[in-house]
Figure 1 (cartoon, rainbow, N blue to C red):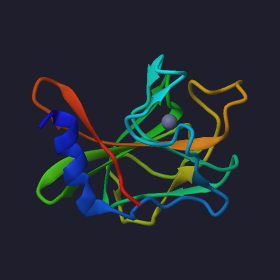
Figure 2: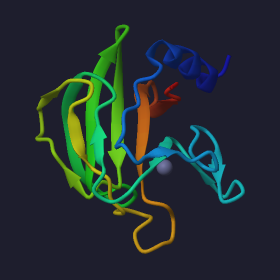
Figure 3: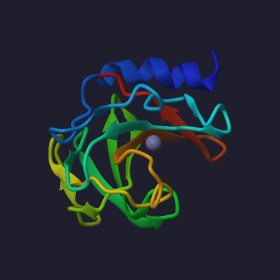
Length: 152
Ligand SMILES: [Zn+2]
């Protein structure tokens, strides 16, 4: 079993937790974890949910805000909520937000507002659909980010 299989099987405990704005929806062309983009030119480690700028984005899980940062990929409102699920520590990163509604160290519940969808980060200025990028991962030995696929 490779590391990817391991993290995927674990993630099945947490299905149906993605919550997004009313106009959003999964884009099957590039929205699945582990799929590559641009004919394999770029790995895609997360799930994209398409919507409109300003759509509300909600937290998938209970947790705590552990990082708010300016990311080249995710934009200036990159938001990380960390949580313990079945005894394991996970990070959930939300990318491309136009605004973050949270403060560092804030406790959040599943369904709480994370922020609003935007077009910031490495898709700014392109025709790429407006979406929130949600990456679920946990730190693994060797400074490896163990990405998991949320089920819904
Ligand atoms: Zn994405």
